[in-house]
Length: 190
Length: 192
Image (cartoon, rainbow over all chains, first blue to last red; front, top):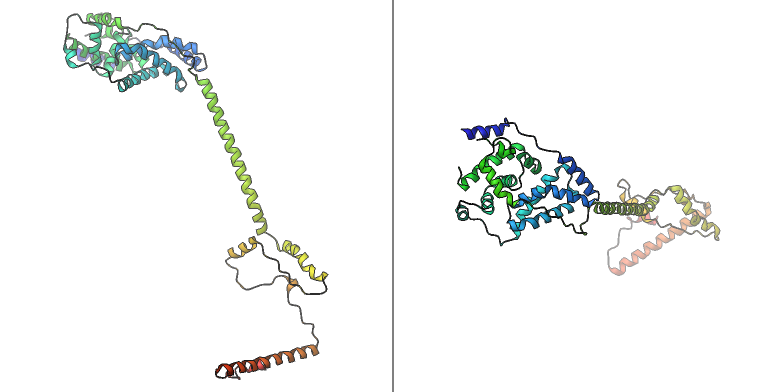
């Protein structure tokens, strides 16, 4: 009953929550325009702002050892293709989608990856390491694992996740709630 | 269950969420400088080159179209001019040929101007035109006879003699070939 009420509160948005912080948006637009006009040094600032987002999206999908190099590759690719971005305000969702596509390409091209099996996930230990919990999160559906990684690993709040991924706050809130419920079940905390 | 802490870290902290934050926080992104190679081109150069290429293509197309139109105009104009050649111009063209007999010793030379291909094509295309020859040139119309009555009588005698000779030759030919004699009455009007 309590869970149902919480879900209803989230869907109806009856609970007060802080609005998404859009204070970075004007900076982001100005940076994108400056880079398009030839000021390549400004792209470093965009990289600093959005590297955690790309890192979290990749960490939810690809092996941790590959993430750092892929982050660099994605930003370099974004620099090449930045002129195709029509709306500078949409830089964050644009690069987030680029990261998701790159993660899919990673599994298409590399065949030497090891899938996390159910048996590996079931093996529980009292003192779980970060890698084990991350492996459990990776077994969740895409929408849940990406939101949970951004929340727990990168330390973003729900509104920040919504503003940077382009999802609605309600969707992010539902994903956090349902993903956390599934994660509790996998960890053994109900 | 209060999810506010999970949502925006407000409200009462959830111990499980706090524990997950502490454990998974060790995997957080570690800032690393972005190394941008110098060979990565930016949009400005590409845009300028693309616009330049488009402008060059449009210019070449315009030049090619202009040349094509000009070439076609030069090909069609002579045909149109010959098709609409007026009779007055034809007469003007015929004048030197017709004046030639006057310069000679009175000999009647028939000068026929060869029709141009355009005129021939025009005649073929005209469906209402008949095959009856029409002499529209007043200069070439038959002139009235200028013979005297004596000359006319002599002309009639020569024609009669020719008809008699022709009839006798015809009769001799039939006799030699063994054919029956034709009815002389039938050709009586020829003999006169």
